[in-house]
Image (cartoon, rainbow, N blue to C red; front, side):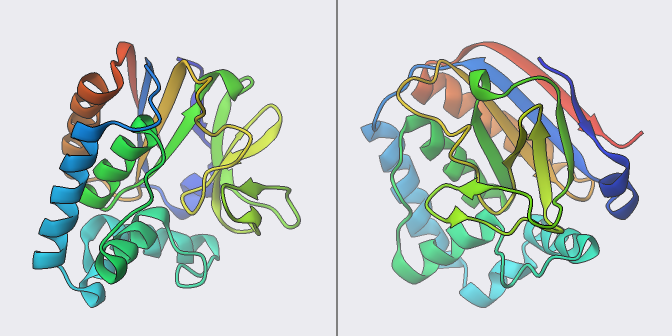
Length: 222
């Protein structure tokens, strides 16, 4: 796995941050019926047991919102992806169906509350750092166009910003040409739930995306 690190600026503001990184070969499908049934079951369960006003109190989401504020970003205006997904689940009873790789990621996210990055690993150039977005830093979010990432936690490679907890980027998105996948689960405060979410992701990737040749790495502030 390529080198992934947390830069000092972000580490100083959010010292408990932990990244669980999974890299693997995958078999892309536009959709997987068995996986989608599992997602629909989870959506029904959430609608039965969770209310919209409780989403921000989910531990992983509450920690993420605190981290955004420490970095200087308003989490209500720039919602974290996990929070946005859960709000859609409860308000519309659905989430977007994308492909088998992204769909399994979204299932882990709505199950755990963690915001998760999913990238075409071959589209990433050089080492990866997790830092804080700068003023006027260019970034094209999937389905969002140009996104203001100033003060937002952001992944960068040799070409610049390619991932945020609010929206992944067009440049490194998963497509039908993706062969090697990088998934990064972000915990802003230390929690055993990260291990559970990682285990769920591994199981789903194997079962629904034919994943193999796994590389796993946990990154945290030293």
